Image (cartoon, rainbow, N blue to C red; front, top):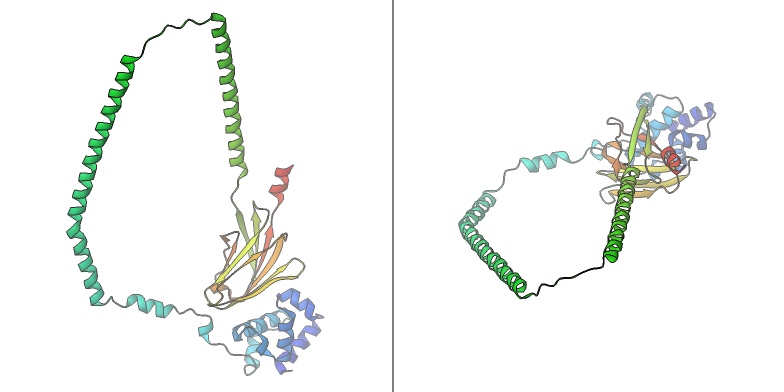
Length: 311
């Protein structure tokens, strides 16, 4: 056991906290808390997470993390700045590099060839348009001639109908029209009701206290968590009782993950490297605190609207 681990362990005991209690407070797995007390940082996901977990442990037991890092500088794992910062300079440099002269020349030649054949394309389209007009005119003329011949050759007939039968037919027609109007009105009312029942997913962000933020989700009966990262980021998901639902480390080889929260209405999401991490609920992105590296998100499903609709 290291001096740093011994000091943290002593502070925890003075607070009257067990490792299980500390796990509930910090949302850090118990095996990582044991590793910090024993100085076994090799089991951590990385040096960055080792420093972050030590800082969280110290704050939970009432110790100043900055003073602790200065006092035990030789024991705390060092992490290079490159583990957190993206490779933005290389991308910016590539954007600033001018295009090769050969590529510019090829583009100019391609553009010139396009303008050379453009008049031929326009002439061909004009010819096709003229042919379509002629075809359409001849087709209409032929249809008119056919209808005229049919009219001339047909024999007009005078048909006398019984007045009683005509009256019955009129009543049946009126009844049918009334039925069709009623059916159309009911269809319109049903369509309007369906449109009213469809509501957009609503996510409300609460206040941020320390590194903890609460979000409320409405207008849905289940939640799906979508996670993605542009760098290395450890993410832990647990239910309201503290049971682990998902533990995943995202990286360039494993940049995304999806978690079906099932029947859970309240979950906690712990993010180790929030600046490179994106969190979505049912494809709607959550607004994270912009300056915090480690964040604890509490997501609650509000089912009050669904209950009132059912009544």
